[in-house]
Image (cartoon, rainbow, N blue to C red; front, side, top):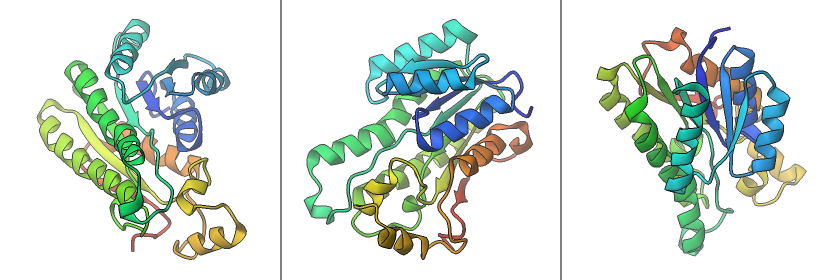
Length: 246
């Protein structure tokens, strides 16, 4: 019960890593708001978690939606202790000069602008001991070809995490990032371009431990960073990658 009594928001929590993080937080005693643009999926995950879990549909690149999410959290709990910015999208593997402007805008809207909008809404109300976990990627540390603008967005997340951490540290608020390698989630096919045994084998060959990240891996790592056990850790970009970045 490392998060007993904590009030946590997890974005992108209707699928993939977000489900693993939300589930782990609930198991460790947190009250969880399951946030996703997929309202039906968020409601289903919230119902599966049971207890005090609640669902919130939100387009995280829309300022009004993010403001409504904050209002819903305050109405339900009176405030928030933990925010996990997990929602993310990618463009298909494409030469950098051929990625469409629409795809570029979509990637930065979800992966970057959402963190800005959430910080703008929530940081003023966060108290000492609160913390933020941003989900970046190994792509922000060791970029893959043909995922250029996705790589860049995750590099932005890592830099934003460090900038937020140093600014908010005097207030007792910690900010850290997680950098997973590709996971067996709905985004995997988009990273690979096609989901075939040969392509999976090619991806796995770059991971020394020989497997993808799992939602459970991410849940465990996020729980540690969000818990008081990590009270002296801020501004890190923790690799959850089976050695991919070595």
